[in-house]
Amino acid sequence: MRKAAVARQRIRILFVCMGNICRSPLAEAVTRGMAQRQGLAAMLEVDSAGTHGHYHAGETPDPRAQRVAAKRGYDLSGIRARPVIEADFERFDRLLAMDEANLSALRRQCPDASRTKLGLFLDYAEGLGVAEIPDPYYGAESGFERVIDLCELAGRGLLAACARGDLAR
Image (cartoon, rainbow, N blue to C red; front, side):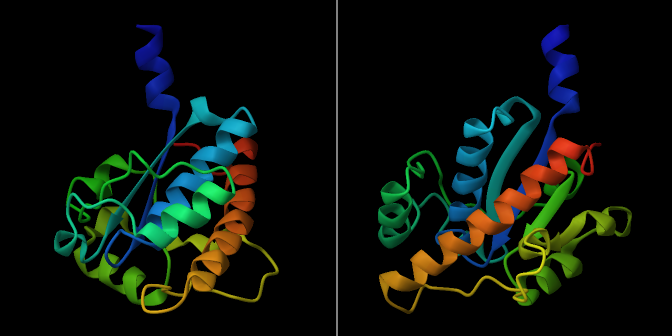
């Protein structure tokens, strides 16, 4: 009974990009890893999905994402691409897109009652002056390094908001 009560109190966050093989898996792994290091893992459940995730469903993250994550101590090995599904809007407390295009795609799919759950991940990186995490897929590995830098900045802000209770259910 106690475990069920704790599970209901967990904050559930879904990170969303287009294919769910680059940015959103990095956001998921970075946030999970930072939460574990800060002792906040028990209060947080994270996952990732793609607005076009059906193209890559079941695939592992891009090898470049895996390499840059491993260099920084983040594990992407258990992550598999999947599409955003209707149940995600009910299940998660926040659905955080990597850019405006994916936020717009979420808005088109989202039931009216869940619209307040939508946002941009970089909204949690206050003072950054950048609103979107760029898609590194067609570029060099350095683009993945930039993505992980931005995920770490936003992850810090997100975890601070969780710790303050700003994202409580």
